[in-house]
Length: 438
Ligand code: UGA
Image (cartoon, rainbow, N blue to C red; front, side, top):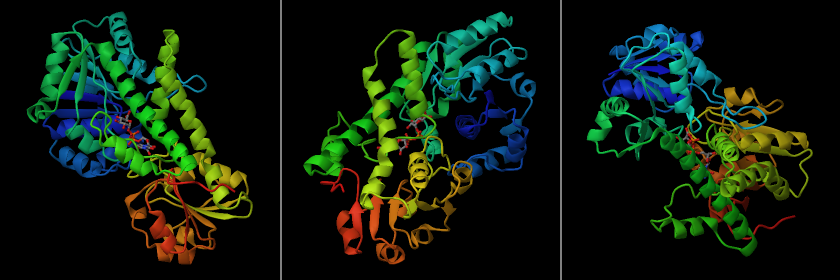
């Protein structure tokens, strides 16, 4: 199949490279000339494990090309995927569809009958209908519109794409269904479940999936608070409930609240849709509130561990990206924590394996250390904010030796209290027994 992929962000670039790897002929299109120049020279605009090798090998085989020219990419395509950004609009949380609709108006000039236009960006229910209308307004005929939401996680995007739990295709006619069946045939042969639904259902499925995962996280975070009050251990509670197949063990890690480019934005967009149709959605609404408060309140845990006062204290922060294996800082829990530390008069030395460049755009007045131990040097407390693998096996004796104050605030429950205490550290986890508040 000949595929045009409009937008080379996370979803577009990973999907484009993986489709090419399936053997399709893929042309990735982006308006950002420097991004396209970079990609043509083998420079990735994002940090994602395995992506560079995948892009390079498929580009070398001539199956994956990059261009700023929409006409070149679209004119011979069998399917045109739209994977442009849909940022939350400032103020109201609506998904901003400007880029999607601009792309549709533009592609309408070059698309040939028989082509399928597929939304891969996360778009509100009814966007496919609107795209169909726009194509009609532009005089396009014989083109189908489908929805094929993406469920990949940053940091594990390629594995998620190639071994999906399921593929969801929302299509209203056979032309669209057949095209997507053909595109996903390699996964079909691998027995990945493909679910064909109506277009609106597919659009909503994406929001429902992310909202449900967000609910799970906020749920376990509130249970963690309860654990701290009643002297129970949230890790064991999560295991105890997660072994029940009906609940499942995943997304039950208590921590500083969820961040990233998806959960915060998609939960808000779901609520906007609910408001538009006058439907409650109280569970998701509460989840958003719980998460916002949690992230804003995390700095108190550091303050409490340091006796209540942050002024004049030096705090080492490990992990800035919103999760491991990415340099993405969008809505990262580190942002409110670091900003509040600075506002309240603390010095911050931070280390993240890959996110310093992105973080430097957000924070001012923090020091970036060369590694975890350098960050810990002379600090009053070490705070683990993101659970990068390399923070899981720190030499705690060495950490304790570098620290001025012997305090470990482990917001990801990476360490056991006993091993931290053995190294002479006072340990504060999340939801692991009674929390002594100062
Ligand atoms: C999420 C979904 O997991 C993907 O399926 C979806 O395709 C993607 O959004 C999207 O809509 O594009 P992502 O945002 O990359 O993927 O990251 P996750 O691994 O889901 O983590 C999101 C946040 O939840 C992170 O801040 C993470 O630390 C937090 N989290 C996750 C927890 O606090 N506890 C958990 O148990 C799991």
